[in-house]
Image (cartoon, rainbow, N blue to C red):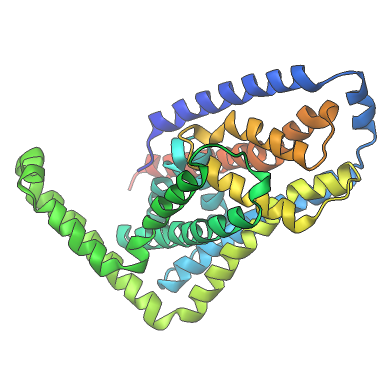
Length: 342
């Protein structure tokens, strides 16, 4: 189940840090030219950026729905959208997005999926995203090296982060090896001593879930390759939609000339790096990092703070607030159902 305390703390930290950095950034960049520059913004960028954001929501919901259908479970469009958005909310307000997967497993289980099947769905979703990010980010980093700060051992650190991130996909790529390693760890005397009398029951529960996970995973690879390809393509499609928000604002909002692929790719690598920072939603680090990035792409100093704030609204705050509304709606519905006798 999701950790309510962690979510509450995450919301407070996220808002506090983001607001503090935002106020400082605006104070440092706003001058008399800012307001005249804002009036020159083409309002169509708001519509286009909004459509891009909604498109990313639809793609994520479809990915969740297809993954569930692959295991023989029917997840409606509405439920897949609500669960996907709720997961975004808990991911954004917890360090390293740790609140997202447990939330998704819990809500999927409440919709009728077994814990094992829900775990497979969430693990596949996370693993595919991890594979795409961990393997593409280093390639893009090398090609677009000039857009990133140069500091001692920077390349070594970056590739180490990529390698560690890729390891999280091991359960998907090598499920049998992962199961054996897990069994070996659980069989250690030290682990038994820590768990005490609860060891056998805990081990049995874990292995039952693991067996169901492995069986469902094998089914996917043997019989659902076509649907797995669709999920992979949806995983790829999500990123251009989400990352296109910034160049749309630059092109339509400010009328600047930018190379679309460059803006997309550099953002992709920056977001990968920021995702490794143990601050909920990357608050503070994201604003500062992308202010430096957008300055490289030519956003003038007097519009930099406002631009980052607007970009952050579309790429983070709307995701978080709409996701929070979806989260509360699901929780409220569950509470009503539990209150009904029988």
